[in-house]
Length: 107
Image (cartoon, rainbow, N blue to C red; front, side):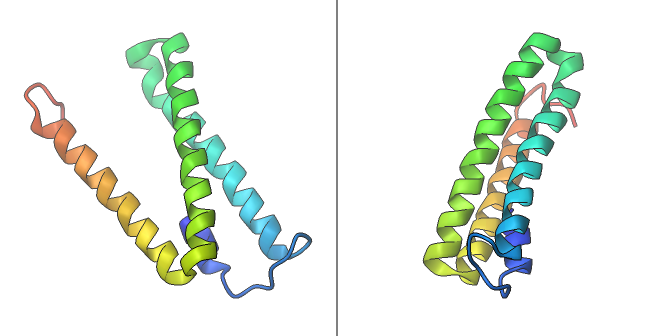
């Protein structure tokens, strides 16, 4: 969502503008991708029921990022979007490092 809003930043805004349509499609696509990727990756390890529960958690996280992206865009503009994108990448890198640094973590 950060990347889409950053790319479409100069478009005119408003409830019936192309920007709002792009932002809405990006938000819905982010939620769908979060659910789909989580179910696909977790089904073999957790089974279908727990994979569905994990997908619900992933969708909640994606919705939080969507809300934070909107707030960063309104409050700080492009620098806010870049800062949020950098924060998200740093958190993903830290989580990856912590997961695989522990004994028994798979590569």
